Length: 277
Image (cartoon, rainbow, N blue to C red; front, side, top):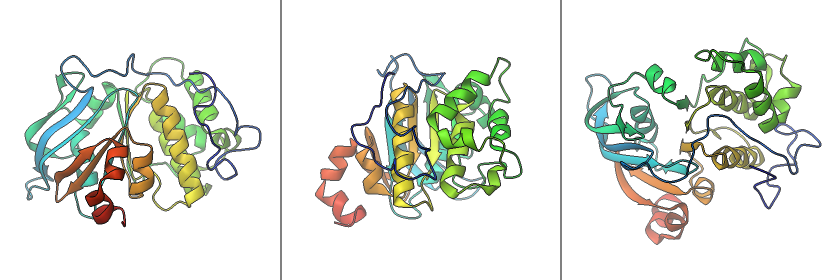
């Protein structure tokens, strides 16, 4: 990828995210990117297909829920509180029982693999909370993200600092001392250290200001433009759908609406029921 993928400077005046001299054009090249934006020959690159299930032996929370994303796409999951959005993400990552349906990555059934095994296959998950080691420095957090790797990680760390310049400035600072937006950057950066093909984000902008939210969305777009698939739960539904290639509206653990981000934003029923008119 060459140059700035954006035509505006949303969020670039917020110095809690970026630093002077890095808000303009730059090259960001992340490792582990997929080779193509096309679907896999056996279907979508990643799909949670007709998933029904819940936690442990408890009641089902998901009811035939389907989510899919291809390389370089941003797929956004929105819906009311309690709709099963985060549960659906966790099901795709292997964190709860899928009693029927399947999860497939590159055509391979991974339904019964552990989360650790899915990381080894190219998936990374950033939970909404407790997603950094607060007592460790920024750089130590990134190093922890590369625990499965046996190669030289210095280049990847440099690439994360290029994506999030403020982290380079604060590399020796304890992550727990950072602002909320900067902590989210550490969490995303640590996930990128695994060189994922799929990056899963659970409400990455929760609790941050609108300016910081815009900047985080910009960085997510940059990651997707390298070919990495993004599957994201987001509470700021309208703003998330504006950057989404695919959108899924969940209600009570099932698909209520599915389409491109633009299609869902234009749908009167979606706007009325989920976007405030």
